[in-house]
Image (cartoon, rainbow, N blue to C red):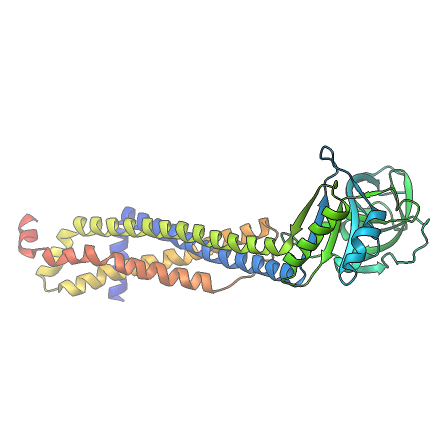
Length: 389
């Protein structure tokens, strides 16, 4: 028990220095743990999104009829000009907009939702399924007003009525044909917005007149350049006055990969700065402790203690302080990581690696930081110290 008592006495004898060293260790361990854990979660989440994009690659063409001199494209033009060139792909057209939609039959409660006018092809292009009811059919009777609502819309309707049968859009009654399955909302470019959307069907009476603002083509990986060139050629030859923008989702995947590299660089830089600050603090603290305890060290040397024994005692004090502080830092760091993950609405998963890496790293750093200050013990002359006492 005597060595442990000596370690505790040594730490208590230097309360201020011990507190400063412990604070630096806690901060460094907390920062390293949080950064490693967050980096792992961020890269895993983004990589999952990248894989989703690559396995379900889409080319999206947005029409910008609001530009000066630009013409709009109608649904009938889509059917005649664009669709025949991509029959082997899943392709759909849609008109998107936000509108106030009544949630109850009395029309007392309304909210703004994304209103998507589309056809049955949209379900296949985006791999949408209904958890109840059904989606639009290719041969749906043209004059029926049908709507398929997203999961979040259904939940809000349930809060105002017990029977989900119809919905009012711009004063017009739509029968609810189905409710979409809840889409995963963790992805940056996923299908989570569909949860807050209401989809209505193109009917034959309005096809020739209604303008569309989006065409989506689901393609295979590595087909993006071929499809993009084909689209540009069709638009240039057939619809030259229609302003449009092509969004290539495969390029989005490349952008995300570049973001991962930038995130890694930033986190390594922050972690390195925190570690350097901790090392400087520990070295300064150990120098101060040896200077303030020269009399004690001299007395120990004069009564037969060897420099190695004194070094081991001081090193033991540092290791005990470092181990306790690093464990506290791991807990704080993991808690901060948990808060970050929940704030970003990702799925939190605890992993032991960040804490283990942090505690091993910070304790090795503490040992290494003690090397130079402990060498000073070799220069202490016990006779001069005793003479001073």
